[in-house]
Length: 177
Image 1 (cartoon, rainbow, N blue to C red):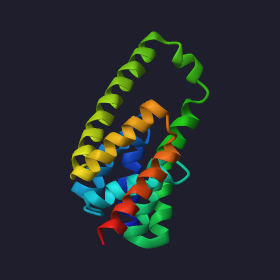
Image 2: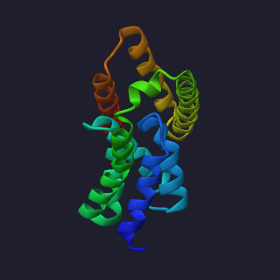
Image 3: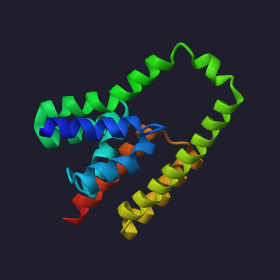
């Protein structure tokens, strides 16, 4: 299979088997892209995920685009982006006509409630893994606590948090020179 075919299969699987959006995709990204295919390493995945959160669009699509570009340039990015979106597009088109009927079914409602709980567990698992990988120095612990205080006490916006964190990291870099 060509490299484009491998990229397509990898990202199609991620798009097909993920419920709950970008955060819930992180375990699948890690398994498929880092562990199985070795397209990127753990730090690159975290970098792509961080950048994907700061750029417009869906996090998973941004990560797919960045990874595809790294593997095979512009066409790799196009294939990865198309492949991660295709399952959702097909499923939504297939379910659009019967979604209202399905959502009123008690069995389906309970199944979705169970899926939501499973997605929360997946997200929490990834948050813990991200925390262990990203918060490794006293400076980062202090910054993390400061940002939590700003988030919960001051209700700082996500944009302000990212800008504050970037500025703080930049100041630390220049101060440490």
